[in-house]
Length: 152
Image: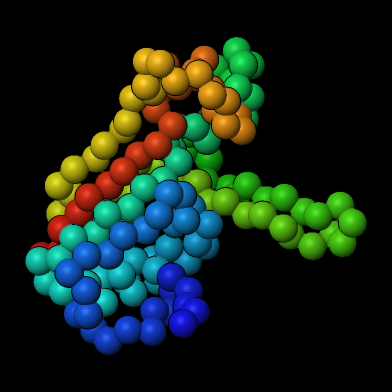
């Protein structure tokens, strides 16, 4: 079965837990509709857990070195990041920035109570570079935010 986050093919109150894997919600333009659908399919008392790229990363360039430690844009700029394929001229990538406050308010407006916000620390012995993320950056600022919210 295939579906989108904005049109889930499940009956109301079908699940005790809804989980969204790392970073997926950042790619949903109509986040309000996606969260309405999450609320609809989750039973009262159910849990919604999701993880995102930490919103503070939006300010910094994707540079794993010291260049990635200097803020280059406003944290409050919610303009989507868009990449266009050079060959076709078609949009190939869109990521929507939302602040920590946005990620708290959006579920709260749908009757969720935030029970935990985890910002994992960089492991002391980890030195692998992943894209624009590295030990240089990871020891100073979080790269991920994990939210756990319970539906009232």
